[in-house]
Image (cartoon, rainbow, N blue to C red; front, side, top):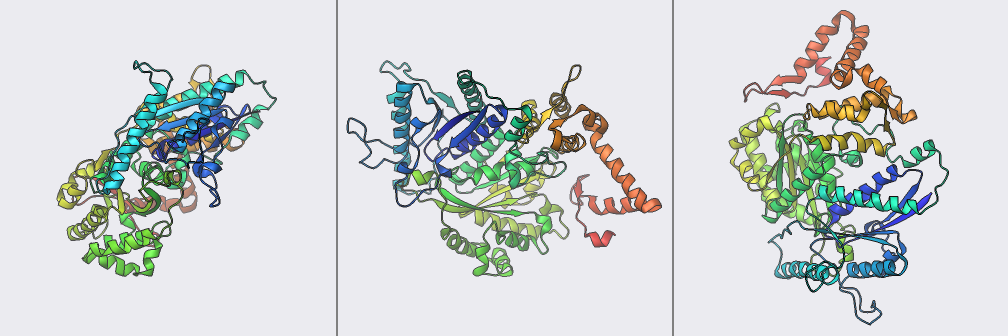
Length: 574
């Protein structure tokens, strides 16, 4: 089996693209299973010892087969003066050193293959920064432009070396995967093939154990690895909330029709990307809190306070105030909560991010708290909800987001969107870029949702001479109603179970047909469940289901014909 070593080079301002690069390499591992073992080097995954400088502990790109370099707004931090070129001159940054090291090796021995990607998206500047920080941003951007001019442009304006430009994350992902795939195939043509069985190759490529499909469950933060199909939307949402932060109000409301996957998009898409170290320049550590308004046992601020002190948020807040005291502060004087938050966030040690390599940058990596409110419409539908309760809640959110320490991400069903107008502070929060419409996925995005998770679990879709490939059949069925993403995930998960795919690695037409296709999958499961209950309850079955659904589904009393989910205590409906 051919080992291919990849080196990912960049300053610390393209954390999102570095994450995409790592995920792309993992997918290619499946595609070339049995023929290639990839070994990717990303400096954020290396142990950095205090006994040596950063660059000394990073392998040289010249030792690798492929080097991927990503440039945008920073060139990085100048290296120590004792790191010099053969002519005695110093390097402007570690990025410049890595590029020249790779170029020199490629000219001498043909390796590494060097791919340079340049991001052309606008550079957003947060005006809260001091003058030194703003000047550094301008200097860094100018240094990138000069680097491109020096290495890639001739004096007459023609290109003397090649690079690839991209503007959005999904564009980068598509081009990177295509270019890497072609390079790997080129390398393999020059490498004798080995003798690995198909089954051994399949098992060796498996990254995800068990079903990679979520059924009727939403995707959570822990499922980010198998969450696909929304790269473009994630990038747009990240851009929006960054712009909101630059304007002094990091708040974003994601709204869309029921069934388009808003909760999964927020929890498994936006949150893991945003909180990945280095994605947001100047932030080295994130904590996150998830708040579902229906979970609150008191008013909305009781629930928010409880979410803020969970283990993944800021449990340290409990040392300065009890949960009840924190709720009271948020209720009566939310600005008084900011010093508490600032103190605890300041004590968090920033993890290694882009600023690790750019250690001389004037921006010290800080910490932020991300609060996810999912779904926001529950502030209108939860039992006992009042306008006064909501007003206090939105007042607290306005103060928290306005501090810049707390970033807020919310989801909302489109049929509740008009109710935002009932609360002026909510309208203020989502002004400018503070709202994002999550549209149904395109046909290509649906294809990614079906095929890419299957790849990570080393699964294949059965092909039929007359019907084609099962994944294509599923894509066409889902594209007919792209808002029915839960049904698609449910169908895929049921096919996985009925195909015994955990052992066989094959998702079959027989399982698909047994379910009755995608439209019949839920009906088939419901009928099976009802039959199981009927065997246990007999004549009481219909009355039992009537009681259950009356407790769980209702109409919103403050809106016309809006169906809402309700919450009930199990012991009260037994």
